[in-house]
Structures are given as structure tokens and as C-alpha cells.
Image (cartoon, rainbow, N blue to C red):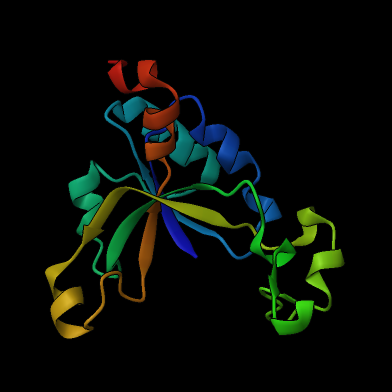
Length: 154
């Protein structure tokens, strides 16, 4: 999954420290209302600095931006119960018994918060989709919800 970080303050650097543990994730850029924070974080991770969310959304490859946070539970460890009480893994996608694997070896998963959903009109009209195929992630919504003082910081 390709993603960008909106907000490079307190928590973003900590999330990105673990980026190497998640080969399925690709950081495509960062933005912050304080350019010096975005530049510092981009320098550490060799990525692009977007001037703001407008420029981020100007990325022609992005169909939408969704607010996400790291999930507390991994769906590879979840089950469905079928008729008769038989348990069936919710997901297994190419992994042998992922429910028995250490969580650190499982793909990173994120929970969609709904705090930000930005969708290009062409995605709705041409792809007939509310998200498209190329979805960028915004992890800043987590801070605003959990740390009200951060959302008021200048």
C-alpha cells in the first residue's frame, strides 16, 4: 500500500521508524503545516514533501485519501464460525496458518477511521467506486481524536 503522512509532529516519526518491518507499505510523501517538520521527516525517510494536502491530492496516481490508524487486532488472527460450530479463518491469503504466526510476521493492518475521506469525482464517475484502486493513507486523524492538544498546537 502506498501512503502519505499528513502531520509530521509527535507520533508520525514513531510510526515511520517501523516502516522497514512492513515491506508491503511504501511512503510516497509527507506534509505538515510546519514545513520544517515535513522537511526533517522527509529527509530521514528519503521521500517527497508535499506543500499541503492540496498538493498531496494533486498526485495524479491517487484516487482517494482515507484516514487510518494502526489496527489493534490483526484480521489474520480472526475467525468466522460456520454452521455446526466449525471455526474458519477470516483471512489466509497466501500465508500458511497465519493465525499461528507471530503477529510481528503478519502484514501490518490499519483501521479506517472515517475522520477523513477525500475522493476524486472521477473515481466515483469513471471507476464507479467510492475509493478507487490507488488509496493514500492519512494517519493524522488518530492524533486529533486521541490528543486534542495536538490539534490545537500551532
